[in-house]
Length: 167
View 1 (cartoon, rainbow, N blue to C red):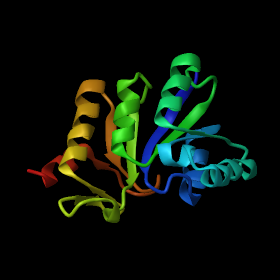
View 2 (cartoon, rainbow, N blue to C red; view 1 turned 180 degrees about the vertical axis):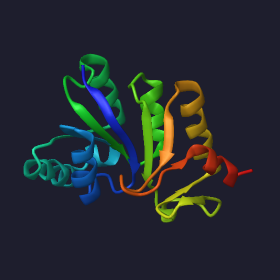
View 3 (cartoon, rainbow, N blue to C red; view 1 turned 30 degrees about the horizontal axis):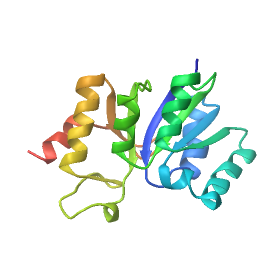
View 4 (spheres, helix red, strand yellow; view 1 turned 120 degrees about the horizontal axis):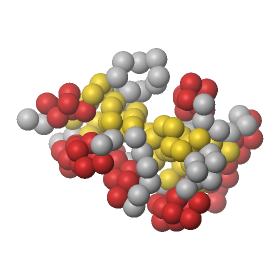
């Protein structure tokens, strides 16, 4: 059975920090991207898949439905996975479907991707009240440790700090 070593929300998906710092520090041997638009874009899919050839990591690109099916049928095989998605909503759907996640790193959600009512938790993460509510559910209903951190060497901000922003 495979294991999700790191689950990360990052609207950039795979980039230098993920490929170098996170994969080396975690012991991962695969990166799974879960994003409907990327899974349906042959050009972007090929770019991400080719990034794995230089690193030795297995790269797989899934739609949300494909990722859930792969988990249900094969439990991610024997991969130690960095699981990446662009949105909190995607991780909520994956968790509801039974994909086992212990920790969720919110690493990059740009303010440009949100409405005006979003708030900055850390410099690279801006969330809405609705997203915060989903994160609280992930913590409270699924016992997932949720934290905000750009790269492994930066400080961790706990979900409780984000909760304070919206009170």
